[in-house]
Structure formats: structure tokens, C-alpha cells
Length: 338
Image (cartoon, rainbow, N blue to C red):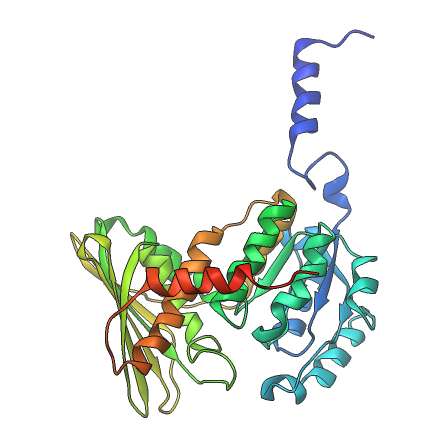
């Protein structure tokens, strides 16, 4: 049988289309598994992907299995049982190990609220070749974060990590607002409670830092931090003299917010969002295997947060991100990936 030029082009297009978009596959959702059922994100995400109102990208992913995990981390040990039952009540199969989960799924959400175990949980997923989304924080240290992305690079496995704040419509509209001109600086703020065992900003401050990087991009050179009882103020100086500031709040109820300082105007963020925008980005990532946030940006924003802790130890002195990164890369290279 001879193929016409148009038919041949169509066939070649199907063959080169990203995984999950070939004909027929749009009707068969990718099977997703969740590792770490100890965060409120677990039932929230499952409702979005598995619910009867799932449309578009969300309908292309179905959560079919979950591994409870859990540690002695405060927010983990008190919630893993409840969220595991929530997932079971949605018809998701609960398994007792990561290897068993990997047998049943195409893609993986790493949801464990304790970032200290993310590296050890990510290793088998990456070695199995499964695309991986890691909920915030990417890991419990900058060195572990670097190690995860380096292992993913070696195995050619797509991995990304983000806070939901990054993809909210309000922040995205602010980032793209033409009235700003070029963004010369930004301030972000939000709740900032700590959890013992990880750098101060990793647990909740990461949301505001993620927002700061969404607006500023990479290129921060130094970080300094002022800590008080009710607030942290962390200032980064970017190359070309741009300045970005994150304010972490611990008094009463604190909302997330941002303002961008442009070359033409100063514009505030006017609205926030829930989890759906990020979940749609995760679904696109699982289908296309293209991360919406580059590893380099995630690694740098974790260096920003670790540098903030180092600045606190040094009494608020400005700390070089390059020095923090160099030390962390040495530690990452020494980690065993067996």
C-alpha cells in the first residue's frame, strides 16, 4: 500500500508525538502512584484527578495506588493514617512498599511531608524510569536536592518539584503583566512556620520563596536574613543589582502575597489559587515528560533557603550562593545511591 505525502506526515507526527498523546492513549489515563500519604495534598490531588469532574489534562491521569510511608516528623506521624484511609475510600489501592507501587503505575507523585526522606524514596522511582513529581520541599537539604536531580539526569528520567503557589493565576498574571516592563525587583510574603530537622524556610517558607523565584528567575548572588520572633526578612541580591525580598510571617493569620517592581510600573498580585493549576501542570509534565520548572531553578531556590540559614548563623551577614552551592555539591557527590 502506498502512502500519500499527507498520510505519511500524519504517521510521522504520531510517531514523534510526546508519550501519552498518541492516538487512542488520550482515552486511557496514565496510572499514577503516590508515595507518602501524610499530607493534605494527597486527598486534595486525588479528588482533582480521580473525581467525576476531571477534565482536560486532569482526566489524563488516574491515581491507582498509594504507599503510606511516614516518619516521626510531627506533621507526618499524626496524619498518615487519616489520609491513607481517605485515599482508600476513593478506591485507591494501598500497598506496603515502594517496589510494589512501582509495579502498578506509570508515573509517581512523591508526597511525603518529611523532605528528609525524599532522596531515599526518589532513588527507586528514578532507577525504575518513572516520571516523578516531588511535592514541596524537593528534599530535606540542598545536597539531597542536587543528588536527586543528578541521579535523574544520569538515568534520563524527568523530575520536577514545585509549590502550588508558583502556578496560581494571580502570580502568573503578575509575572506576565505588560504594564511592568521588565521586572527589576519583587517582594513576596506568606506564612513561615518551622519544622525541626530541616532548614527554617523548607517547610512553609518555601511557598513564598517559590513565588519570589517565579517573578525574579535565577541569578541570585547573595542572601542576607533578619530573624525576629514573628517574622523573617530574607533579601537576595541578583546579578545586575536586582533585589528580591521574602517576608515570612508568624503572627495570626497570614496570606500569600507579592508585588513586582517593574521598570514601568509597580504592580501587586491581586488573587491567589488552589491546587488545580499546579495539578494541570503536573499532568502535562507526566504526558510530555517536559518539566515546567528547570532543575537549575529549583536547585538555586533551595540554595537561597540554605543561604538564609547560614546568614542567620552569621548574624545576618550576606552569604554567597556560590559558596553554599559548592559545599552542597561536594556533599551530594558523596551520597550513596544504592
